[in-house]
Length: 334
Figure 1 (tube, rainbow, N blue to C red):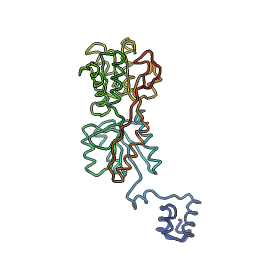
Figure 2 (tube, rainbow, N blue to C red):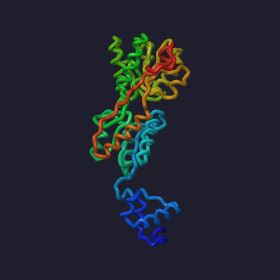
Figure 3 (cartoon, helix red, strand yellow):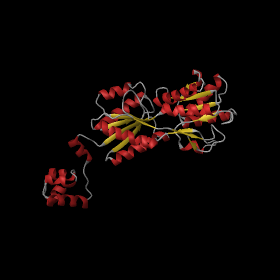
């Protein structure tokens, strides 16, 4: 329609509308460029991103794969990714794998078929077999929240976060500690557990293997893990859940058995989600810079797409002490 109305070739119009600023002058005189742009603005025309991508071989689209977007932590990380992408002139779309390998494979292929420029994986597994496959196929990606192999990632220093928890429990006199470790294939579960166990060992407190239970990061997983611990040994005097949602499930299981937090059992979570401060007993937890983590993951991906090999980013955790582990506590960063 523009070509017919203005008497200008479609190729010239396309080039002008898809070239910013004075660069469009290479396709026509200043008068021609001005006429095309004025007509397009008046009639609501905009550049065609699909047509543009065919020329540049870039779609401007970033795929993001997470276990479940309804999780507050993952949604907040994605918010950081999307914000940073928008600032860089990129679009994102996200889908869920439910941490199921078959879903991970199918969703990734779907994104590749949609010609994403690169991907951010928030569901990386420690064995990194799948990541090795897609890396071998030439897919550009970074990791968010979880680490795997030597692939570039933006994560929190979860070992340090776990150590902060272990030291806090030792400092408050807890000696019989159980850990609700989360999903065994996730670096978040392994690293947080490792840090806590190491810090407790430094204080002469052993955590036996049967006091470490790998289960889901959700309330159901936390409840199941606590019930297993209570069924196989004495009531611990402290429980560290590597996720606030698992801590919520643990709290419910303890309450149902008449076990009180914190008088009988200190309870500590991880991530400092809104529910941590607002529960019946405010939850001691580790604060993670989740939104910032997402922004870093996108920035790292831009470097990878530019052909560079950036160093992974390790963000600082912060211990937030509340009443679930210390009856004297108000909300206190440590």
